[in-house]
Length: 103
Image (cartoon, rainbow, N blue to C red; front, side):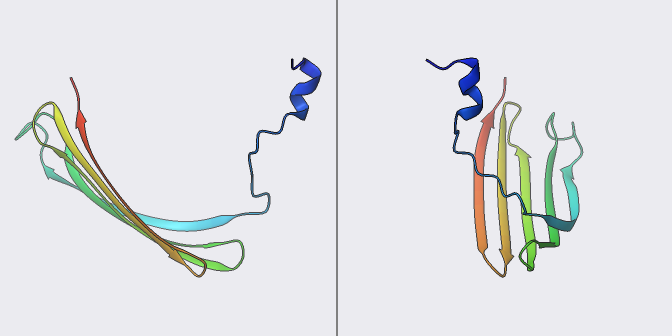
C-alpha cells in the first residue's frame, strides 16, 4: 500500500526531453466552401497550412497540412486531414478521415 511518503518515489515512465526546443513560423489559409445557412446549417471549409522551422540538433523542418470539413446533411459531417512533416532526421505522412454524427 502506497503512503504519502511513497508518492514522490513512483516512476510513471514518462520521458521528457529536457533540452529539446523548436522555433517555427506557420501560415494558414482557410476558405469557406459556401456561406453558412445557404446549403446547410453549419460551416464547411478547406484549409491549408505550411510551416518552416528550426529545432534542437541543427534540424531544419517543414510541415504541410490540409484539412477539410464538409457538412453532408444536418446531422452528418465529413472531416479529413493530411499532414506531412519532413526534416534532416525524419519524414512523416499521416492522413485521417472521420464521419461525425451530431444530434
